[in-house]
Length: 325
Image 1: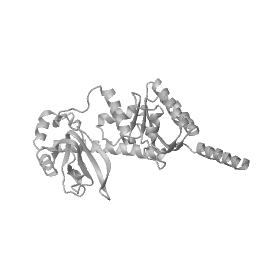
Image 2: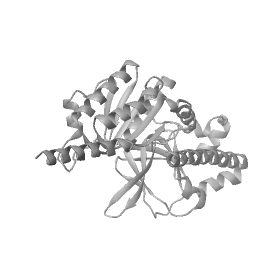
Image 3: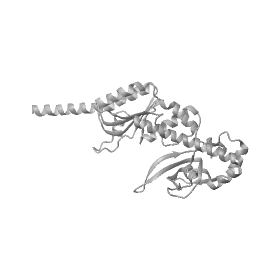
Image 4: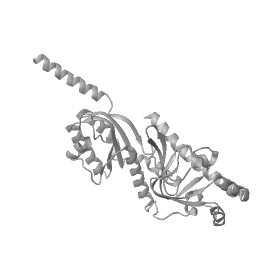
C-alpha cells in the first residue's frame, strides 16, 4: 500500500512538472498584428494600427491549474498596466480546476483596478468530460460585468475591441442609420462635385433582403458594389453545404472588385447580413466613363489600387505575426 501510494504520488508530481514545463501560451499577439474579419475603411485602419498595442491576445492551451495559471499570470503581469484590452482565448483548453479559476479571478481584479478589460473567448461548453467551463467559471465568481465579457469565438472578441477603440477615438457614430450617398464614400473623398455628378449617372441602386445572396461563387458578373447601408459577408463554399467566412464588408466600403477588374467568374459567395442597400457599377458602364471622361477612369483605378494594396498589406502583417508567434 505504501509503495502504491508513493507511486501514485510520484506520478502526480511528474504530471504536474510536465504540464508546468509546457507553455500554457499557444500564441501571443497584439491588435496591430491581427485584425478582425470585418473590413475597415482606410481611415479606421490607421486608427487601429496606431492603437493596436493597447490590445493583447493570448491563445491558451492545455490544462489550467495552479501551476499553469501562475505561469499565465507571470506572462500577463507586464501588460496589465499598459494594455487596456486583454483577450484570453480558451479554444485549446482541456480543463480548468478551482485553483485556476481563483487565479483568473485575481487576474481580472488586477486588470479592472488598472481600468482595463478582460475578455474570454471560445470558452469550452461541452468537453468530453461533460464539463461546461463557462458555467463553471460563472459559478466561481467570473460572471460578466463592465470589465469582463465572454465571446463565442476570438473573431467576435477582436471585432468588439476594434469597435470600442474606433468609437473612443472618433467619438461619434461610425455607422449611419441612413443610406449613404455616393459622394459620402471615403473612396471618393476629395472628388469635386461636378465630377461626382458625372460619375453618379453611371451607378445604379439596389436593395437586398437579409439572408439573400448578392452573388455566388462561379456566377458571371463584373459589377463592383458600394455599400450604402448594412453588412455583406463574403464566404467560400465548403463540402456538406458549409461555408467559410472570409470577411465582412460594412457601410461605406466596397466589394466585388476582383471580377470587376478581370471580368472572371465570382470567386466566393456574397450574402446580405441584415437588409443591405448598395450602389453598383458594371465594367461596361465603367468603360463608357473612361471613354467620355478619361480623368475619372484614371482616378477610379488609382483609388481602387490604393484600397486593394491596403488590404493586402494587412494580410501581410497578419501572416508575419502568425509566423513569429
